[in-house]
Figure 1: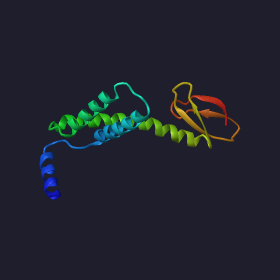
Figure 2: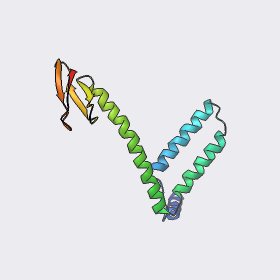
Figure 3: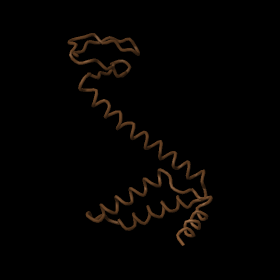
Figure 4: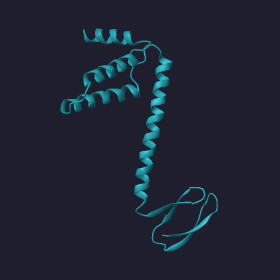
Length: 135
């Protein structure tokens, strides 16, 4: 009985797009929105939930695979861009214990100088501009 249902569902999904990163994100967003909506009164929460659910299933059961793939690629690029900003922030914070990070006044190149070296002349590796800083 269950094997028959699995077989029928797999036959139904042949030629359809299925689940990707954007679908998983929409699923988690929908679940979080429903949980938050249980505690906080959000106007039009039922309508928003219904719209996201329809979009989610529409994408999963779509036969227009190239367009869904393109949507997913745009989502992944946006996600990577946002995550890259947060990860670089975290790595900069971990370096602040051992290094000062200065910017060149001419070209805005970031320059990492070890702490505890006193007053030093810093030369920018990109443009060669020299400036005085305290390490």
